[in-house]
Amino acid sequence: SACGFLIVSNYRVTADPYGQAASNLVAGNNLEETIQQLIDMGGGSWDRETVTRALRAAYNNPERAVDYLYS
Image (cartoon, rainbow, N blue to C red; front, top):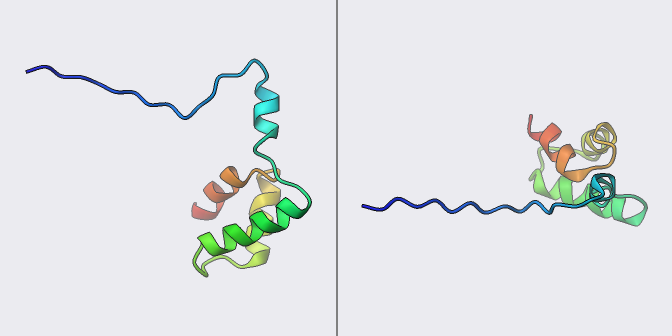
């Protein structure tokens, strides 16, 4: 029988990797909104200070902060 593979990628190739990385960062009002979203995502496991520390350690990158919170 035939065997096939489907590779799906969510990554966008860009000539400016720093610009792409910067687009993942949050600041200002978005920071407050992101903190609340992460608190909600934790289902009560993470308090505001824990989430804020994770974001600070992740240089305000919410994807990396989630990695820190789950590890």
